[in-house]
Amino acid sequence: MEQTDFSEFFHTRSESSNFMARIANISDKVFETGFNLEKTLDRELGLEKKDKFLVFLRENNVSLDSPKELKDFLDKLQQTISKLPILYINIAFDPSEETLKLLSEWFVLNAKKQFVFDILVKPDLLAGAVLNFNGRFFDYSAKTKFEKIVKNVMNEELVSKIPNQQQSNTPSTN
Amino acid sequence: MPILPIEILTIIADVVIFIFVGYYAYTLRKKEKEVDKIEKKEDADYHKIVDNALTKERQILEDATQEADEIISSAEYVRQSSKEAIDHALQELVKQIQKESISTATGFMTSYSDHLKNLATSSLTDFEDVSKALQADLQKQIKDFRESLLPDLEKELDEYKKMRLKQSEETIAKIVQKASSDIFNKSISLEDHQKLLIDSLEKAKAEGVFD
Image (cartoon, rainbow over all chains, first blue to last red; front, side, top):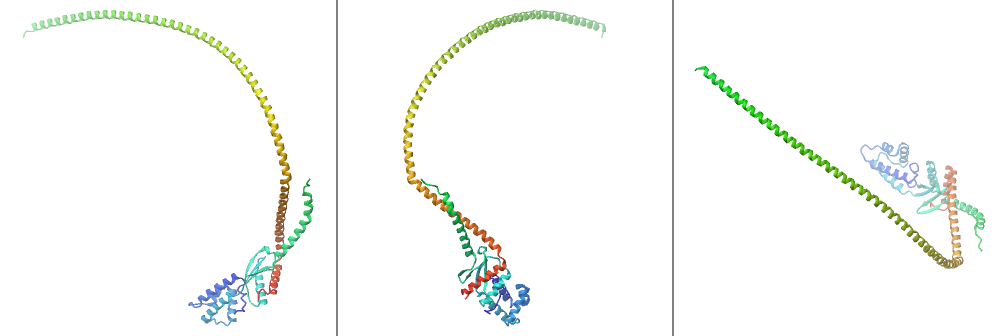
């Protein structure tokens, strides 16, 4: 299960926490009298994710008729999700669902595992991203370069004008 | 009983009674006349007394009025003569006061102008001394200022100008940066942002960030 892609259910850290809480609710109700998995999934996850989760259960060979097996699987699922690596990303735009999907796919393809994202929108980054992973920062934003360019341009402009101004403003001393 | 003696007695009694009543009435009338006489006499005496009193009263009033007129006349005379005397005295007093005030004012003016002249002379001398000293002191201060303070001031002014210029440059740079950042941010599409994000991840992967 460690290599499983959960991007169909969540992308971000808050989404994963929400999903785990709902899985925990389902797990708590497995042994209740009159437990109906489909109805419970429908209520907790919604129609679309319910179907995907049922497929997920079948792919993992979970017997839906065995409450014990189902509960064990759900508990193990929670543990797996809690161990997923968290990547803190600062970006300059508000990501859409498509952006999150793109990110998840990239990590599954390139890092061979799913990452959970904690995204912070900071427009002053301009473009690119600042990544924080395992306590280390990596700045790939356009902000620093842009500021340097603007500063260079400003300095060139001011230096070209100031010597003329200073000559005219300096009072003559006798 | 025999009736005739009784009737005779009755008639005699009646006559007696009649005589008695007549006598009483006569006596009574006589007394009334006497009383009237007395009353008239007393009335006449009363009027006589009253007339005498009235006559005396008129006399007294006349005497009193006459005396009052005399007193008023004499008082009027006294008032008039007093008024004239007082007016005369006041006029004399005013003339004396005017004379004295003129002489006093003249004396005061003379002494005041003498005093002012002396004061002006001494003040002018003092002022000349003070202004000379002030001039010398001022010249010394100007010299000291030119030699020591002015260079320091010029230096401080230069430093202040440089500092303000630097602050202005920084402010301008911040404004330009902010404006250009806002414009740059708005000019990038969502697709470009996504592409740049993926590029960042590619760089991170190349640097082994996710290993």
